[in-house]
Image 1 (cartoon, one colour):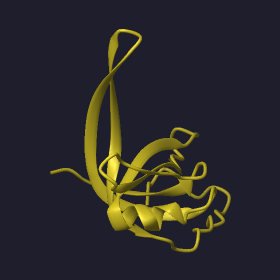
Image 2: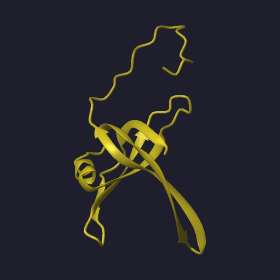
Image 3: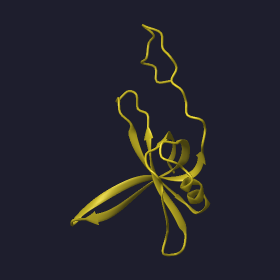
Length: 113
């Protein structure tokens, strides 16, 4: 099993739905900082059951930590097979957003931690 840890901001209001079997699920995406690429990484997430109820409370722009596993599904669109990968969320935390540390001129910024 692949374990995924992601920290980022909720990119838009979560989509809360109920399956045909009556089970709640919630889809949302995170914009995770990738300072080396200079643009965010977009991480698709889905939560089921009680975790869906928790994810439903997220607001756009809110900073969250998620832990889960990867899930890849396939579907057809316009006659072509497509693939989608999401993080199935097992745990969520709502910490305060991190603040960026001020760097002194000439300080090395190449270390990723």
